[in-house]
Image 1: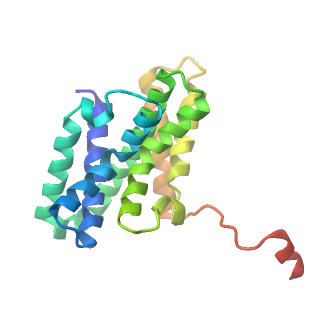
Image 2 (image 1 turned 135 degrees about the vertical axis):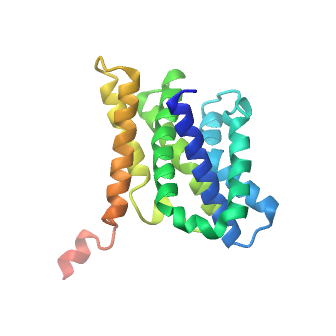
Length: 209
């Protein structure tokens, strides 16, 4: 089994757990928890495939994604009170997951002969829109719109991949370097509580002062 595929499954597992935890906190029943976990884990890739008309849809073509989601929900049900102690581990899986999802989505976009910028956007959608759908369905402001450098880290890693692809760099090395960029930016931004600038005052307001 390829390392990239293993990381993809681990990322799916972490995403599904994050969805299950949010749904549980919102007092949803088991079916609701399954739906939110499913949307969180594969919603981004599913949206990407729908947009580029790729068939079969990601999880339809590989049932291991569904098995992973079911396992994540069962894990959450059995060990919810212990998951907080695994916070750093889950954060690492989640961060690796967005890096892998970004690059897999980007590569898939390129394989469909999309413009590199569009393929880059497809990579970002793959990585973050599962979380967006989760937050919308559970009546929360999506994380990527409120705080933390999340989607921007995905875009940065995707850009690095596109730049490296212009040179004679082996595919596996390009993938590792680009995914590492996503992970490093994400970890550093959370560690030091970095955020993107917000619009608070315009030029005229500043002048009045």
